[in-house]
Length: 152
Length: 104
Picture 1 (cartoon, chains in turn green, red):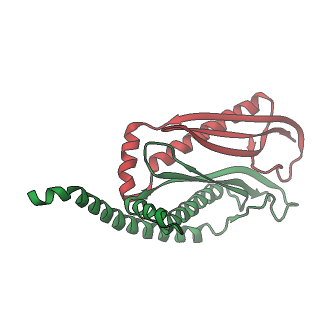
Picture 2 (cartoon, chains in turn yellow, purple):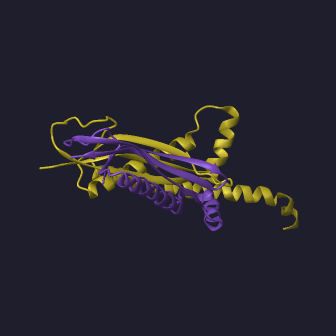
Picture 3 (cartoon, chains in turn yellow, purple):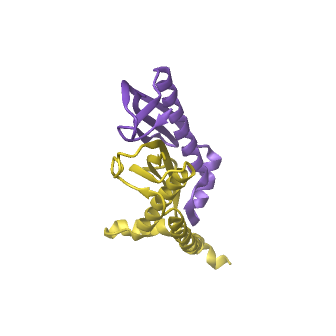
């Protein structure tokens, strides 16, 4: 035990890295599964980044809808990103994190639109903000747009 | 009150423009939440507490904007935009703005 003491910091680091990697991987897989499932479920709501719907002649009821999510990195991703930033190039660990979060925010927005009986969302805007604060690595992803419910 | 982030309301005609309306709120998170978030930084995933906090704040900013629009006599706000900025360590401003109009 005594001989391990000088390496205590290294051991803590390794444990955190391992926990981050395993927990992060499991959570990511589960999240992607749930995203794919809900994307099928909400297929009926079409999302446009166009300002106006393709069929303008029809009367619609318009409401603003939002979807947002705050995601944090895991320890492994943070360390990996630190390494990437030395050599440059594509930071894959963050790419998947942001992809997942953005799709989640769109799904939440679609969910809000569906509850209002809308068939489409137009003029969708995205916003990504780093959550301010003491070393907490987290970003908020916001998606918002105008949900249109066709009036019969 | 109708809110949209496009310049029109499909099927409705704008009768009168009343100008820019805005609403904002500044929120700070508390230390407990920050501590939990830093733990979550090890395993990753959604920070539900923050999601709620920011959503609540955005709703409040929107509500303040709506109140300003109502005071001006509007019944709709068009071209609504959101903006979030961190002003200091641990505090963020949520800002909503749009054009107040009267639609028929």
